Amino acid sequence: MKNRKLLLENVHIPGIETFDVYRKNGGYRSVEKALNGMTPDEVVEEVKKSGLRGRGGAGFPTGMKWSFLAKPEGIPRYLVCNADESEPGTFKDRYLMEKIPHLLIEGMITSSYALGANTSYIYIRGEFMYILHILEKAIAEAYNKGFLGKNILGKGYDLDLFVVPGGGAYICGEETALLESLEGKRGNPRIKPPFPAVKGLWGCPTVVNNVESLAAVVPIINEGGDAYANVGIGRSTGTKLISACGNLVKPGVYEIEMGLSVEEFIYGDDYCQGIANNKKLKACVPGGSSVPILPHYLVTKTASGEDRLMSYESLAEGGFVSGSMLGSGGFIVFDEDQCIVRNTWNFTRFYAHESCGQCSPCREGTGWMEKVLHRLENGHGNIRDIDLLAEINKKIEGNTICPLGDAAAWPVAAAIRHFRDEFEWHVTNKDEAITRNYGLSKEPLIA
Amino acid sequence: MKTETTIYQNTAEFKGFSKETLAKFDEIKNHFPAGKEKSAIIRMLHLAQSEIGWLSTEGMDEVAKMLNIQTIEVYEVATFYTMFHVNPVGKYVFEVCRTGPCMLVGSDKIIDYIQEKLNIKVGGTTADGAFTLKTVECLGACGYAPVLQCNYKFHENLTKEKVDELIDAYRSGIIEN
Image 1 (cartoon, helix red, strand yellow):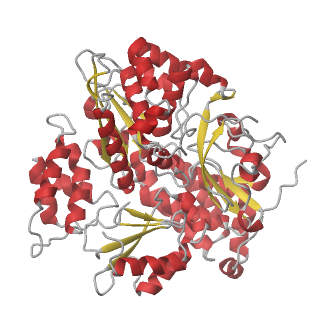
Image 2 (tube, chains in turn blue, brown; image 1 turned 90 degrees about the vertical axis):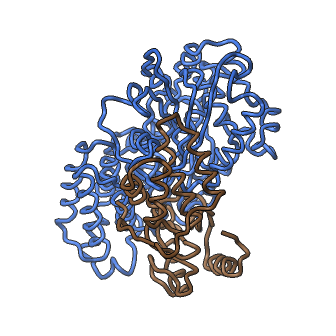
Image 3 (cartoon, chains in turn cyan, brown; image 1 turned 180 degrees about the vertical axis):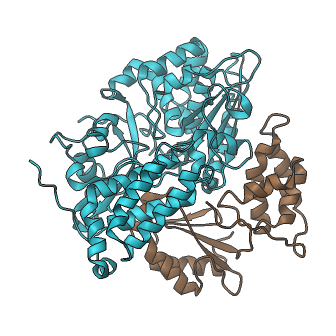
């Protein structure tokens, strides 16, 4: 199929990280177009038409999110870019910001104009301190050239843009935790409602968007919302950055048009080029560690035998029974030598470590799951532990302020659903489980 | 949750921040509207830690004074975010990613190798005070795994050989802090 690139088309041009080269290659046109001939509402309308969905993981329509923004008189509004990319398997925003920082800045200027924000922030995870410096350099260039600051392009619109680092907390990727952190506090998520669109940063109306979503505003304004909606498939419009990792020949960041087949993505010459070391595919987590794992027989085909495509709908086909989610685009691939129990334990340890500690079900539940999985993996498990995990799962899911609890519960539930034989084997073959891995899971015997 | 939550004094060694760091503090405070300067706290703590190595109560108290907030407001932030070292660490802190994607391509072996090579356990510091080894959760570099971060620098696609080179390079000062 055709493969349009809308974000990373120019990424390989030498010097594209500088203002001059970026500008020469068509950069900052969207700012000119918006400020010269469009009202803020018209910009919002184009984004709505584009069908762009939040690229951070939830997939909520960006235009709709923008239209929820409260606009009371005399109170400032803020746009905050969520660059706290911490979902295991996801490293697409890092790539975009490092290679082509002006794309994000351009997207933020156009979006801030649409929302009527005069101060905007990029909240970036603390580990990406070197990217913070790249962004600040690019922002200084944009100020110098009159695209930021007072009276941009002589149109009477003012915008200040700042970068703020986090301190290494996964939870700050959740938008209300991010706002708490941006206010200089611990990253404890807030109870919603009120939503940030009404009460966000310092109690003012705020929109929080992912890096990739804001970057996508640039081609949407340049080419029009309808043109953007023509790229992709169905309600999954446009392109998506996929960060592929794990046991692949060629891991990395790829911009794909929505609707590319998963088969092509894993094995195609233009993409990941198959499983490393001539091994077989065992499983795949297609959207960051929080989404359900898919066993090999459900990766390239859905349960009904159709080709699985890289789109919100196709990856979710079959619901949680036989599907997963596109999530953040963190595509993690497991070869036949990997142990699912060990990996599930590892992910659960991650959530136990990253739980903010505010809600008991998550704080305690993730810790318990980690302990139970640890003993299963190390040959001290009991057959009842498998059901115990499912039991803990149910007590976390839906009982927490923010979705971290769900994100911790889903991978465990999915691993047990698809790889129960492997969990049981860890109990029945304790000695062996310590010395070797189970291998490929068996395909269920259903017609 | 972060496990290191006890804070320590370091009265003997803390001599205040340098002029450059103080100037940066002032600049960062200007990124926020009047009255909202507390937002600068995380970045100030990063700068403070870069200068003094780890965050002792003296350093944090100084930050609190500059932001005109209570010291507890700084302590609670420093003990929440994993990047802040609230107890003494070596000059170079190796933070090795241990999460799924890195584990799939052998981060366990890298962690074992560094422990062996530096003759310390995870969490420990070498006798000469040069290296501390820590494990951290996802660093967001999964496609270039296994990966470690040392004082804000990423070192990717690690192998045993690369670890050897890295340690030598830090020891001999080829890589500066």
